[in-house]
Structures are given as structure tokens and as C-alpha cells.
Image (cartoon, rainbow, N blue to C red; front, side):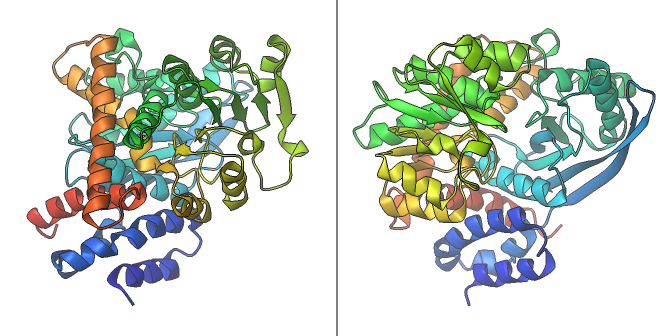
Length: 450
């Protein structure tokens, strides 16, 4: 049994209930063996056993009072996974599905994603099982303030810099930052994704969606292809999906789908991004509202499609951009995409494809950008926000967007060259995993056993 497989089997015994965490570990470790075989120092220093365990897990209760005067209790977490190459960096997720296994998966992925950016940031993730949907502004504010009342003890501008994720946008970041500032009496860049009025960065909202498109462009240019004139399927309807659609228009492509937890919009003429922003960012409504506002758009509820399948991936497209959530694209979905002629998949969400789907894309030889590479634009721009905060500066949108485009190009080249180094050209899963791993692992070895 290989070194990597031994570690995977041990984790299966100890964390059998943390299925998405085990999936993330298997996806990474199963591709690292060529690098482990090439250099014995990683096994000698037991890097795999060390890197799969977080440096620190913080869990706490969050007590707050709703608009009816009822006391509510939620669970809060921060998984500080690895700080070998920089302060902990990773988002906060507020969603009923949040538990320790989900956050360990996200934090583990974040280590390698952050490493690939080339910036000085370690990996972390956090959040709560609180659901902002259906809550009043005051309830969201009170929860965020209560959450930060505990979290502030464990973060700082050079210690741990959280950002947003699912359920945590500019509103939530603002409420948490206000409480952090009051508790610490410090005006510093301890959260990213802030409002432009108090240290936020232009292009941060757009960054993950834009970055997924930039990465797709790099993959396709390497193959002599382009997105121009092509139809694209996009899942999700949050920031990532919205600005993925926007950037697709910028490069001459046409996004024809978006989705939320209740259903999907298909508009063959192209998604109206301004209407999508109105529905999701202003009205915070279901996509049924989009169908009401845009003649010709069709709405398909989740209940109308076979269980375990995502209607988005049934729409013929040249390129697919999964921008919703983990495991939203399974083997059956992948086979449908491939059958319909899909030539490119660039992941905007975290681990949106199952292992079987990933293997199907690799076997088919399509341009496949795994999440830790293709969706790194968000965290990269968060680090650019940290740089601006540290220098008390504010860069133009064009400056930040230009840096983002360069970073995504560098990530592609690093992953592509590493894949070639290990005899698997075009396998950006292997290339991204090994490239991200080696930088962190070498830093861990250089810093000794801590």
C-alpha cells in the first residue's frame, strides 16, 4: 500500500462520519504519490499525517435574540488548518448544512488553493449553522455581532483573516467588522470583503466569478480554442455565478443558465445579469421572480427533474461553470455534459464535482479546471485587499482586475507545467494538487516539527 493510501485509510477509520472531508482528502492525496515517490523527504517528515490535521479547531456556541424576543442558539466554528506560508485565510459560511466535517473539507482545500495563488496566505475556514434566509436585518445583525463576540479572540490582521462564503456577503462582513472594531479598538484589515467605505477592495465581489472565466480562457487558449461565440451553462445565482455570467459576456460568450436551491432558469438568448442582480442582490427572491421579469426565460423547479440530477447540466453547452456548492455535479451529470458536446469545465464553487465526475472529465480529455485552481480568484483578491489595508491604500478596479487576471494565468501555468513534469500533460487536477502541496510541505519541513 502506498504512503498516500495508508494515510487515507487511517483517516477513514478515524473520521468515517465526515464524508465530504474524506472526499476532499482522497481527491488530493490520491494524486500526490508521484511527488512522494520522487522525494522521500515528505514521507520521512510525515507531512501527509501532519497536513491532513488542522493546527487548531475552535468551536463555540452563539446565543442571540430574535425579533420575537426568543433566545436562539447556534454553533460557531473556526478551523485554522495550516499557517506554514502565511496567516490563516478562508471564508465564513452561514448555512444550516455547516458542521465540522464540511468546514474541515473547505479548510483543507483552502490550504492548496491559497498556496497556488503565490501569495503569503495559509488555509482556514469557519462559519455557523445559522441561516440568514428569512431573517430580518436586525436578526442578521444581532447574530453576526454575537458570532464575532467569540471569534474576535482568535483572529487578527497577521493571525487569521476571514472572508465571506455562502450566506456571508458584504452585509454580514460589515456587521462582524463593526463588532470586531468595537471589541478590539483596532481599525485593521482583519476581515476581507468589506464595504468600500471602510477598507474594502474594488473587484472583490466580482473576483471568484471573473477568475473562473479567466482560468477557462487560459485552458482553452492553450488548446487553440476560445469562449467567444460559445454558449455556457452556469449553476448558482450568488456572487460567483452572477459575476461569472457578467465576465462571460465580456469575453463574447453567452451564459444561458443560472440556478438556486429551488430551481433553474434557462434563457437561450442569454441570462440578463442586471435582472439577476435585482432578484438576488436587492429583492433576495427566488428565481421564479426572474422568470416573471424576463419573457422567454423558462423556470424548472428541482422537483421536476430526476432525483440526484441537476437540470443545469442537461442544457447543451460548450463550457460549464459549476458555481453553486459541493457535489452539485455527479457522474450522470458529467456524462450528459460530455454527450452534449461540452469541451470545458471551470469550477467556481468548492469541490462541485464528485470524484466520479472528475474522473470522467479527465478520461474524456476536456479542459477541466478543478476548484482549487479555477476558483482561487476570490481568495487571491482578498489577499490584495489585505495588501491595500496594510498600506492604507485603495487601488482602482482596473488595477485589481489586472492583478487578478495575472494571478489566474500564473495558477494555470504552474498547474500545467507541474502536470507535464510528472508525465500527465493536461491533468490540472494532479498539477494543481502537487504544485500547491509542494510549496506548503517544503515550508513545513523548513520550519521544523511544531
